[in-house]
Length: 197
Ligand code: ADP
Image 1: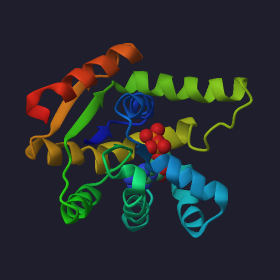
Image 2: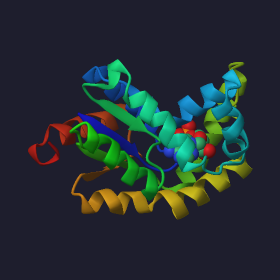
Image 3: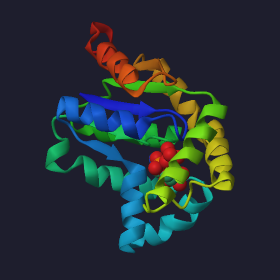
Image 4: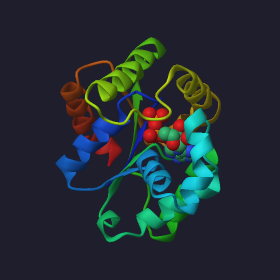
């Protein structure tokens, strides 16, 4: 099963991806996590991506696609995966289709988490507050300015990706305002429905 978790920053893609990864025994592939790890390691990818991540802009398609191509080749991703934060542009979606086509695979389902903007702001602020209260590292882009940029980028560059997958007949929408476990249950039942394969 090849799943994409889609939605704006703070919608719960990471939380739901982790739960689904456990349930289905397939890995969560998060471009945000991969890029943050590259920044922390000081690798060439990290050095190239840091400024964009901090400001809330998108990292270049070539860099991100390279990361995903490498990750999809790893052994744990051969029986399925959950993409979290990728694709974020239509160009990335087209490239992903090509990559999967080469290995005879395709996207089974794109799950869009629908959450309004006021709630997104609240959630990201809460995440930053919680991190600093527990002594964990606050994400460099979890501040009001970068969040505004991340939301603007979502609307201009990422939102059209939903239409791309709607046309392909694989997009399902889920109300992301409900409890975490209720959202997971709905996703699981949608994935089990015959139409979503
Ligand atoms: P969130 O969804 O909460 O905004 P992520 O952890 O998914 O956060 O991503 C954090 C940042 O990493 C993004 O704002 C962007 O700079 C970069 N990034 C992650 N995925 C991609 C992608 N597919 N294309 C370009 N940039 C990306």
